[in-house]
Length: 478
Ligand code: ADP
Ligand code: MG
Image (cartoon, rainbow, N blue to C red):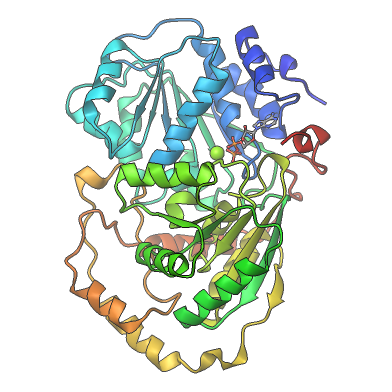
């Protein structure tokens, strides 16, 4: 067993870790921290909820204890795909940095520039940002990145995805070539690894579990459903009511408007429910998340904006109202439960047209998921309606990503092939002008995924995460 004290962390950091109640490092922490402290580039892969954040935050704080920040020249930079995740990483700095007096600034969209500017002016040790807002500050001449010694890209495969990659490439050109770069994720498709290599210099690859293995603490189940939305919603309600251990849950939909529809439907049926997606204003997003964390809302209906990284320790259930189109998203969505050694349950509703996506998921995670109930036989009746819907949806134009909306999640919602929608909804949508925040098309990501899956035939070792057995300390008092 490795101890935190053997990793080379500073005394102040060790005290903070102890105060946080951690008795031993998780495998990714034990393996990545020494390399990070030596200044090496690291590509760290470990399952969801296994402490990747501290794997970069702790060595960063240790290294930052020497030296001082200068005005407008941050010393380190962390990039995150969503505002909520960036805010969460800031909380991690507050927790682990209590003894270290570091200045931390959060640059995220949806909130005012002034406060962020003031902090930059005073000089920051750690800048945590979503890419678009960071570039906005840069373009306003308020920020210099030439002093950045350490660059962290969290959720790295998502950040190198096509929506983000132009911003990432630009940001990386503004940072000295001699910097240290750290990449972390639970998933890392081979084609993204190749891309990652362009940003890393002779990295140490620390892989405590095969990339894309699901957390061992999450019990996964499939529920066959009709593809008709109202029947799916009824099936979801029954499923939720059947759960004896439901403390709270996140319900993922593939599309933002389905998030709103399902939210309203569950609300009408008397569930304690909130909604979270990328088109909501930042204040509502924060309020929803806070309400969920504080148990004021039991169920949170969300888009994939909530799929990555969010660490809400006690989420007991994840429900996929839709099978995710990108197989990696499945790993991240269900990874919102079963964190830090706790147990969790993940249910995925599967209709006939979703089978191809399910197959891709099972191939990615290299395991078959058990069925609670098979897909009902009668569910093929509505094929004709679905074809009509599909045609309408294909007619819908997608707008270019606007500059002001670019700070996060520039990924298209899937085309309407996965789930059926009520006809009138589709009409309304098609009549709407393209939204500025609507991201680019996802075709090439889809292609890449398919290619990636072909490449994923060699499996590597079995998943470990927190180790074969969950250490007792993770189970106690959590
Ligand atoms: P990941 O990024 O791998 O998904 P996080 O960094 O969000 O995971 O950590 C998941 C949870 O595990 C957090 O609530 C964190 O406080 C907790 N945690 C991290 N390291 C340890 C540790 N060494 N011992 C116990 N809990 C830990
Ligand atoms: Mg994380």
